[in-house]
Length: 187
Image 1 (tube, rainbow, N blue to C red):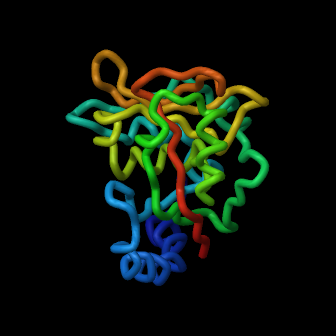
Image 2 (image 1 turned 120 degrees about the horizontal axis):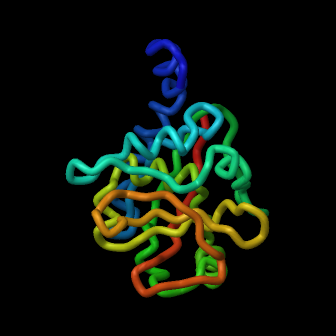
Image 3 (image 1 turned 90 degrees about the vertical axis):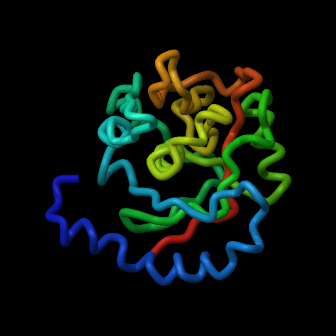
C-alpha cells in the first residue's frame, strides 16, 4: 500500500468496535455464512497486487485482469460502498445458493432476499481471508461490472492456483455461484 505500518494499521482502528458488534450477532447468521471480511479499497491496494498475496496449499494467486481494467469495475446501481479506505462486508454467502445460475439471474434472487451482490474488491477480500472456499465452488462477483456485461470471477485453475479474471454476466457453469453479503459497514 506504500504506507508505513502505523499508518496502514490506523485504517482499521474505526472498524474494531464494528467487529465486536458483528461477533455478538454471529449466531443469528445462517450456517455456512462467513461473518465478515475486511475489504481494502482498490485505490489503497489494487487487486492486481492483492491476488499474488492470496495463497492456497502453497500456490499463489494471480490475475489475468490488468490494473487499468480492474479500475473500470464499478459498483452496480443499488450497491452502496461505505466511505473510508477499508470497510467490512458482513454476513457473506459464498455463492453456493446460486450455483449454475448466471450472475444476471443470481442478482434477482440476491436482491429478493434483501442482500447485496459482492463486488470485485469484496471477492478479493473474501479469498484473501478464506481461499479454501474455492475448493467448494467458484465465485462470481456481480456487484461490480466493467461495462454492462463483464463480471469479475474467482476460481482455481487446473494447477490449483487461485485466479481472478472476468467472465460474461450471462454465462454460467455448474460449479459457479454469485456471492452476496447482508450488509457493508464503514468506519
